[in-house]
Image (spheres, rainbow, N blue to C red):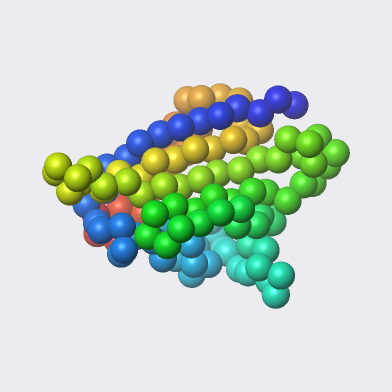
Length: 131
């Protein structure tokens, strides 16, 4: 199965410093991104959606700027072409507006479905942080 790259930009009324814990900490992610999120002793995150668990590792992060998660391979194809998502916080220097930039590389090949999914997730995040 081929993978699809989705990108999206969403404005949010909250500071990058306030948002970052919701993007990186298991408790923050569990409030808007997944049904449950935990981290094991090796630093691997377990994201649970509708009772199905998926493991990922932090590939890169910079406090108050971005985090990139790569899903651990579940089959041979995933080993050669792993799924990942990145959430980046960018501040418009002129207006001081904060934007969440999403990059999602996954098995979901319907761009409309991915756009709807991320729109819903970001809406939940905005409700959670009051932004």
